[in-house]
Length: 349
Ligand code: TXA
Ligand code: MG
Image 1 (cartoon, rainbow, N blue to C red):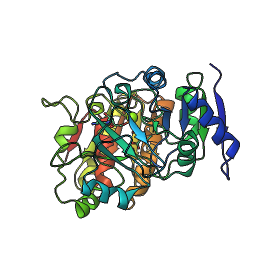
Image 2 (cartoon, rainbow, N blue to C red; image 1 turned 60 degrees about the vertical axis):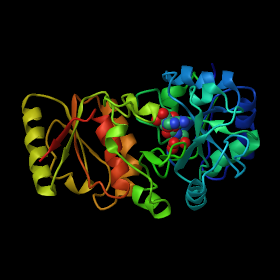
Image 3 (cartoon, helix red, strand yellow; image 1 turned 180 degrees about the vertical axis):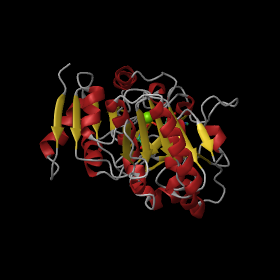
Image 4 (spheres, helix red, strand yellow; image 1 turned 180 degrees about the horizontal axis):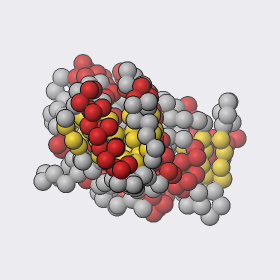
């Protein structure tokens, strides 16, 4: 298939928005920007179109999609919005928050992967909202990566993964958040945080103090099935095995240096992921250093993380060491993705 590719450099082009909406209306697939990561969209109410998403990504069939809306009328899609869920939407929408609610029969089983609930999000990105509004239906969209790879945060990574597999790829620059949305499940009581994101657990609790979070429930391979079906799959992973080092800054640096030196001595090509401030400390021959941003700025680290992981694939490193960061605020989401990328290979010093 010939993929139409359009990149905005400044102004959003109405013509391209209308073309994207036309592709979606005809049952096609369109990769588009959002503030979190790029999404691979289809008309959420068209089950054949939605099936195409699973094929293009190589996504397991039992992993439900979230639907993206551009206005506040959710009535056609969800049976009930609890008061606190409404309060969360009012505070964080449009933005990087997905709320899971009981769905109506208008949302096909293909979209929700057979579940009776559906995740709903109103993105802040204007390109995304204009496409959804032009279609006039919600857009079902997972992240626009091939299944298993880190989510794409720019146009080029979407092209790398999806060129020839989708009808259109639309870009408007780098995703400003860089990690997938925070997901809160309100189809159960008490509600649960299923995926930490840029909207932090602390911020959620300010609105609804009942929200539970257990990191173990989001882990791959735990005995109890994870609540978000997608959590059980290996995610965000670079090709080379990744190990995360956590602990106090001094001990971390010591352990990183020791391991990097050892690997280099064994003739391995080592990838190192750490704060910009650490670059000099880890500068060794045979080391590919990728900065994830400043140690003082977890939002910057969130924005850079997935692209840095994907660069290690380009660089064909054989193993990767990453320095962990503090788990408060946005740091919780960063560490959640980093640990998943590492398949939970974690060293505490
Ligand atoms: O920021 C985002 O959320 C991006 C952009 C494109 O909006 N989308 C995204 O979608 O990350 P995806 O499919 O890559 O991740 C959605 C996650 C999956 O882990 C899925 O299992 C979970 O949400 N999920 C979706 N519907 C659910 C439901 N009804 N109940 C529980 N988990 C659900
Ligand atoms: Mg994804």
